[in-house]
Image 1 (cartoon, rainbow, N blue to C red):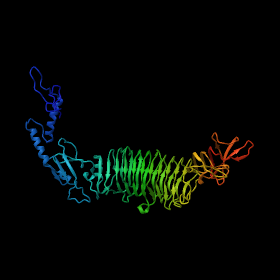
Image 2 (tube, helix red, strand yellow):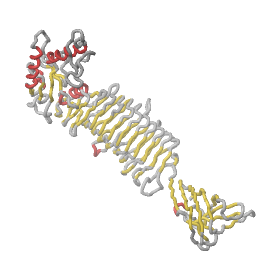
Image 3 (cartoon, one colour):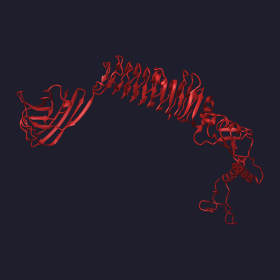
Image 4 (cartoon, rainbow, N blue to C red):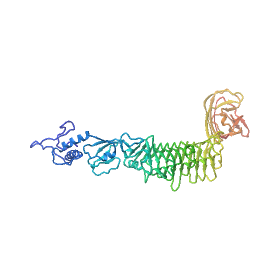
Length: 583
């Protein structure tokens, strides 16, 4: 309700900003004008108090007073009900709020009964809403009682038992449909039908909450046409040994949607991205005894799996079969799926990649019988980076067939951990690999590298060369003394600059200081030489060669007659040398 705001009101009558009414002054001014909006606000403010007290407005001058007294008494005289059924049986109209101790009553034994079902308030104006068994309860005299939602709503407030015996599917689905933030408290929920995830819900499991399959062929969670802006946190799903059980089967599960800290066990398939799961985040999933933890079927681009922990070995309750992560191509593409870190062990195949631009980074593989990573027919542009391959089981770390433009970067395989590091045949094109310089403790046996091109190892070093005399080494003051050498595979490039004054050496000019790890494979390799103006030499051509063991460089002059001789060391001079050679 607002204060009067017409043009001729009495401004600040009751204090700053508190305007009021004024009387008329005959012949001078009118009384304050009334407006329809102000009169409606007065009417509705009064009548809604009367109606909320359960009264029908009439001509009784005392009706507002009676309504206020009634509502005061109702607020004071709250009721407590032991169960939802007892609230439904209520016929008393003299209170507005009530507490319900538990859904089924404290006399019903539960594994983990909720300490309080919740608080409910009466919505007097509602005469039509149906009893949904969760956030709206209708009593025997037609009063509607609404759950006072304080953040998330527990599935026990929709009738879930969580005792490991009763079937809780209907109650949990009811809670998901009616609420936006759903809480699964400690206990075991038996599930016998697929739970459908809509848009805009957050489902969160407590640390000791478990959903357990009650039959074969069950999918715990699925989406129908889409599940935008929805997330599931800390789910604990137990297939209980039933066949063809799936954890999640999602369509268009995207737009800030994801699954976080899931723990799944003893089922056929963990997560199926059936279609349209763009950018979905599956963060820190753990799956034991799950034959196919992750399967992307089509159009699930840029999906991210962070820190997977997948084990289908017999020790973990599995059978050693299946594939840890399957990224299909099929009728539609899965572009740029990512797997970051984690470990995958106890499968036929660690990762089965048939997609475009898959990136697998720093993932650990063990005990995958056929291959840790296999890429096949439709795989293009995949990148497998810094992966580790350990445990003495498995035919190959990498198995490629009919792929194009694949990259393997810096793998680490324990010696003899696989039959070979690479099983890559001639059906593949444009594949490359990078490994550090060979070490007998890693990546052995290597396998067939005929159809994968190595990216050469590169190393770079800066050093300070010196000028010396061949007879007397001597010393000098240097104003420029820099050099850099870069090795790529067996090819070395270098650039050297020296400027000195006051040299005390004698004999021929020798450049010293070439690092031993960059020595040429043969001495007397000639390299190009650039000489700055003013360097003391005679003759048309100057070059440089490695001499001795290769750590020294001699500067030679070629005369017009074609003879070569080493240049003498000048007291002052400058020289730039650059070249390319093989080690």
